[in-house]
Length: 313
Image (tube, rainbow, N blue to C red; front, side, top):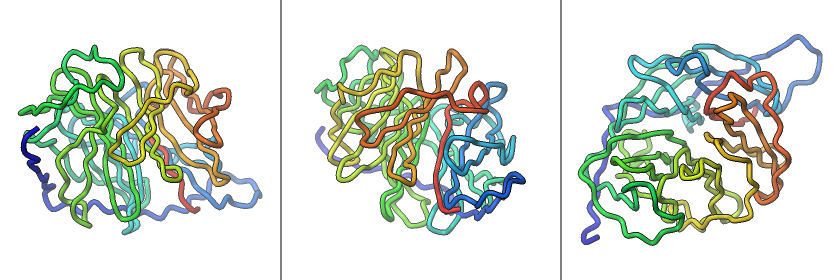
């Protein structure tokens, strides 16, 4: 790599802020309300044209808040990820199925959503580490090269740390997918940095999501070579990530990991057992040892590649 050119991506005057105060009171029981609320967004086995929204007070038992809450003007709404911005509004980003772009929508109440933008991934300055035929080994030291274009953008995930809002998105230029980091460059989230690969995680990895615990960053991703969920650890968001060889084996043909922290500090990993059309979750106190997976009650067999967020109720 000779020069470190920068591409800044401008989103046409769309204020990506998140709001939406939903109080929702579900059910008729007399139990005291939970101090926390979990929101799940997902497409379902019947349609990837609509995003459904669910809520829960414990991160286990979810009920429908709004089926078909959002349908984009065109394309699909797969692999949606949700967060609440400092302006109070809720934002989702998602796979559009339209090639080298990702979609955005926002809501004030998690029920009514407004399409914001399909964001093209820049056609310049794209670093491509090991995306040729997808046969490289994890942790390969193959040097990045520049590509003039991106052909696919998939499974964007929010990562928010302090006042920095980022997206981790899987990109492909004709070979395997690689996770890239894009960071908002203005407070209104209207411009984004050029995609930069997460150092270390290369050669056919998709559906990457990252959480921070202490001083370390933990990436959960689907390794396409074996189609299993992997755990990678790094000292910074951009890497370098190192594969955790002790990570629990959840078996082959799993994807769409989503991770949320429960109020007691426990981490919960949800994943899609897509060939069996089931959804499972597993818990960990330290992101090292994981409990025996349990099937997600009520929604297993319905939801696909979920996004989950927790906030005060």
